[in-house]
Length: 310
Image 1 (cartoon, rainbow, N blue to C red):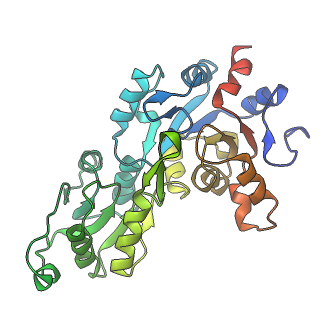
Image 2: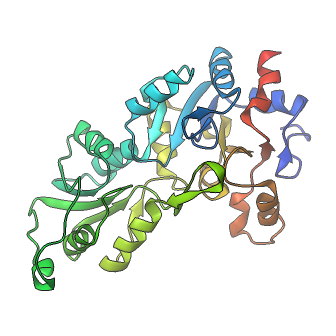
Image 3: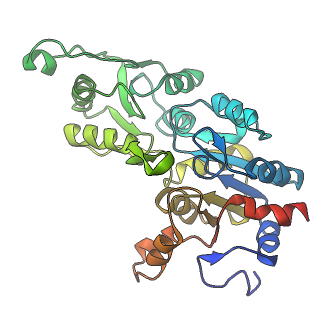
């Protein structure tokens, strides 16, 4: 590695450094929200960056903690925004959770799912049956709740983003999880979903913590910064971690995933985290916080365009 590329972390990526960095990698992993789009609007220049990276022979992947869409739904959204993408390049927590249950947990049985229809579809695609999608309304008294009927074939509770989250669902999950051999898996721990104009709504992490508190158990999570999402991708595409770049807008998920997996990391400032936060981690003297310091940062991934068009 040249001395220019090995300088202190959290360096602004510009000029000749962009080309050096791109020459040093074969694969680029992008987070989605706050990186290639915000809501339903593509970040200016993002589709050109993705399409040009591919033209330059790079493998491009998308790694998102959002569990409300299938891989195909993501690919369709990207195509409509001008991105040249196929579904097998998308790794969301709905898909990765299904793979995790099947390959790592070797689940034999059904799942009690707190999650979306998309999660149901991804589970069914790998042969895992689920119960629980949709509203679950309160009825009866507390003794009825404590003796709620359980499906004896359920061997795992899975928590993703569930807009129908309710007291009855929390109770049902707890009753399953009292059984010690019941697996407990969450998609991710993001506590807030940032929206346009500085607004936010509660994220899956809030729901997962409620279930963990009720069950008095800790869930395993598959989403970023857990290395499973990268493992899932690497197993299918045979990428070399030292020749991968992770691009994201969140230090505690995207950049930490990159650090956990030994990837190069690039923070883009079109989403959640700021350079000031990254520098505070870098200068904190805390070893634990160094994983949240990116190698480089850009204002937007559009800053990669000149090097790709040159």
